Length: 381
Image (cartoon, rainbow, N blue to C red; front, side):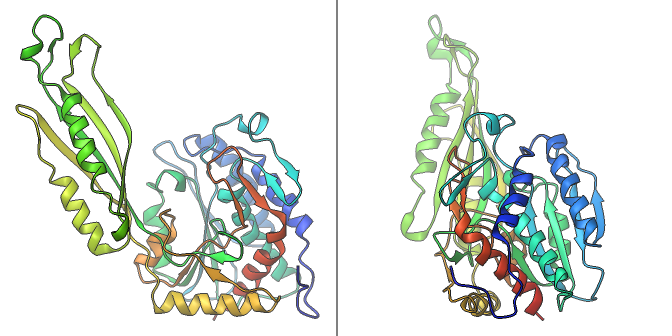
């Protein structure tokens, strides 16, 4: 690991790690508002300690609170920092399959990679800058989101409102594949296919039934066949339900579909295709509801310029920063990029195993990622 610039106070990777672990030890699955709010309490206290202007919006629809923290200096469009405090792991993982532990360069824990490490790095970077008696050139707004892992249903409007008053957006999602960040993401769509048939006794009057499950199976084959890797289109039927008994021809069945697309034109095309699905069998009814949940996030000139600034900062510590190819995973950065705000994503710690039982970050990435965040705050203007 290369040393920081001369006269640059040292970023203490052990201190960064200790802070990350404190956040990770507060388990916070998306649908457990009380659990998420325990992390919000922790972050609110730390941000208040920096003198930030705090606005905490009570959660709704069973989700946790949204926490907004603003620097007490600067006016006009500034830097929007996005991080989410929810995780996919249920309460109890930390005591079982995903104990917090260190094995060489890897530190394990629920949500440590996606994305409590990134959120803490953003906090530490601002604290590190302020410890030096410095301020960012632009005002900085931190938005800590409680339900990103389920699509940010209660936060999207708040994110977009903040983005409209931002010059840049920095998203603290996990780093990728070494010294890489994210500059483009596919759009994400969610759809529900519902089939209505006609019930009948499977033994006595089988011929009178019209199986909703059979029709749904045909629709699933049709939908999955729309995947086109060459065009960057993927569809996945991830949840299926239906029927009332093994001896009953099913009257209803449904499936939930995940769609990923590379650009707005393809999003519109595939949305129309899915919403226009017609029944294949006779005397059954097929309806489809849904839309794009996250718009595509495409690398443009503004994003390229922001990425170039980050590359130059990384070079200060003798390292080369690259970006990953178009990625299929969505984030809140999709919202800001779609509004034309230069957005740099994947600024969190490097690691692997997002959502898995081997979720981990790499200790070796903490200094460089914290340095990058600190210098972005310091130099963006």
